[in-house]
Figure 1: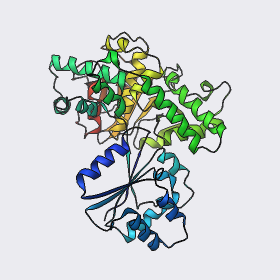
Figure 2 (figure 1 turned 90 degrees about the vertical axis):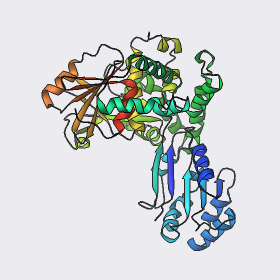
Figure 3 (figure 1 turned 180 degrees about the horizontal axis):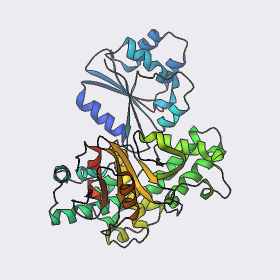
Figure 4 (figure 1 turned 135 degrees about the vertical axis):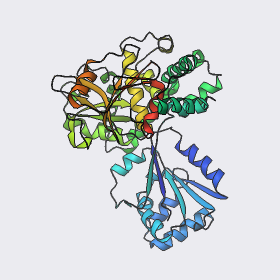
Amino acid sequence: MIKPLMVLGARQVGKSYLIDAFCTAEYKQYRQINLFEEPLLEQIYQSNLSAARKFEQLQLLVGRKLDNPETILFVDEVQESEEFIAELKYLQEKHPEANIICAGSLLGVKLKRFKRSFPVGKVAIKNMYPLSFPEYLMAVGMKDYIPVVQQCYHENSKMLPALHEELMQMLRIYLCIGGMPEAVQHFLNIKEDLLEFDSTFFDDLKTACIDDMKKYVKNLNEAIKIERVYNSVPLQQANKAHKFQYSKVRSGARASAYETALDWLMAADLVHKTSCITTPEKPVRYFVDPDVFKLFLHDMGLLTYSLGINYSDIILDRLGQFKGLLAENYVACELKAAGTAFHYWRSENNAEVDFVVENKDGVIPLEVKSAENVQSKSLKIFCNKYGPPYAIRLSTKNFGFANKIRSLPLYATFCLGATPTSA
């Protein structure tokens, strides 16, 4: 039985492009309907017709029989029709052979504020993110490096020094431009010359996101609050309190005034949230402190641009305090893209481990180091107190294992989304 597919993701991560390419390649008969450009579908589903008659009208609009395994319908900007989304339950139950994919700008926000009965269990939902680092390697013609990294990860073996340095250099470039498809394509168009990279794309992206806010919020005041929270995220990552503080959004601000704005940004996939846990035991989510959390931007290029960091400082490794900030945000994005749930840990005496993940081996601490100096008092405190089977340290150093600590180079973070290898 086939379920309609709903693809969620931030603006301009390539949802429409990828779905269009898939449908064109895999189906003999393909029709795309964009509800911004063709509102007739929305009108059909707003009518008082029965569900069966609406389906007949849909097929007339598409010009094809949808109960055909060789036919697929892609409805873009589907957030414009709650009625059609609600009818996906009928389509899945009464026309299970119909192939339907839906996507749209801020669809996640729309679903959070859905007024009708959402077709729970009748729709497959997938999230799409900016290109992760291995996907970036594929885009720039270095896909052959990926299985080499995976082999070193699974075998706990060293990467050849020359390859290690090359991958670290590719990672530095990735920290500059990020994984937004348009930014990566522009980088390829200028023959990968970072000096020629036009970062004003990120200004346009932020403007577009703000314009979207105004379309899908209840009032202008809500849009202002969302923008304030969003603009505060990069600077809050350097917060000495090691947590997101509403008072840093605006002096005297309280959570009650800005929680809705934060929920909006999370639903829009523009920020990733990691909550603090006090006890690293399974199930981890039981020990979450809902009032203590960090936020990360969803794309590295956007973060680098928002902080005003010069690309030369990244490439020449002279970032100072921002080096750790970028490394931590990068790890959060890679874990998110790999489908790995993550939190962070703090003790009463302010010892802190950057990330903890739950896998078949237990609750595993992940420490992020942006250089080769990998000493960590907090990681030692965690391991002595809770005795995890092993710990993971992500840094600029090569693969290694000693004293129950797995050392992974930062470019191998994506491997943590695979089935882990016990140390």
